[in-house]
Structure formats: structure tokens, C-alpha cells
Amino acid sequence: MKTWALIMLGAMACSAIAAEAPKRKPDTAANKPLTYANVVSFFKEARFRPIEVQKRCTVFFEGEFKNANNYNYCLIIVENSDADMQVTFYLTDAHEMNWVTEFLDAPFFAQTETQKLFGLINSGHDVRAEKVGRFRVDFHRWEPRHAQILVFSFTRR
Image (cartoon, rainbow, N blue to C red):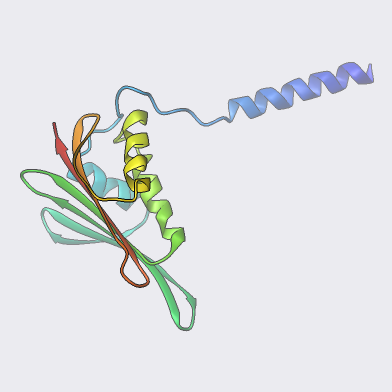
């Protein structure tokens, strides 16, 4: 009887864990269009402090003091032009890289697009007009002292 109870308890635990497993992003389509309004809304929902510079440019800011002399922060600039949409991340701490991950994992991109965008980050070089699913993407990275700047420019194909 104890054995049977342990088997049932184990089965219930496994089914509860399986029920909590995260859902995979669909391979084919994104859930939300990659638009200026949707990207701005995404970062506002993440509780970033927004500053609307103009109708086509919003800057988001998050930061914290690590100690009396060290302030880590993240700036995210979302710009919309007639030709493309650009998202720039200015990061001063490795922890802030989580916001890049959150953005690339957001419902704007299909799973294959997300994987290719992460590939651009990890490639170690700048890219121009790379075909990434529905987009042509320019990607640039700079690493001035104490910061990292990542710039994604998305143009519809």
C-alpha cells in the first residue's frame, strides 16, 4: 500500500511539474507586430521609466546604486523612422543584459527570428542588412569603457 501511495504521489508531482513547463514560442509567426507603439508598450509594462523625446522616439531608464560610488543603469532608446525601427540598449552592468534577452524573447519575434537575433549578438561583429525572418536587420555593438551599446535596426522585407 505504501508503494502504491508513493507511485501515485510521484505521478502527481511529475504531472504538476509538466503543467508548469513554459510554452515554446511558435516557429512560424510572432504574436504581436514589431511596431513602435508595441515596443514602447512592452517596455512601459516592464515598469521602465519612459521619457518621450518626440512622437517617434522614447527613452527608457532603469538604474540602481551598487554602492556609494557605483551606479549601474540601462538606457533603452526606441526610435521610429519612415524606413526602419531602431532599438538601442546602453548597458553598464551584465545584469542589465537581461533586458536585451527579454526584448528578443518578446512576442514580436518567432522562435527562429529570436535564435537568429541572438546569433547576431554572439557573432562578435557588426552586421548590415542581414535577413532575419520578416526583417532586414542591422546590428552594431560598441564597448566603450564601463558600458556596452547594442543597436538593432529592423526594416520590413
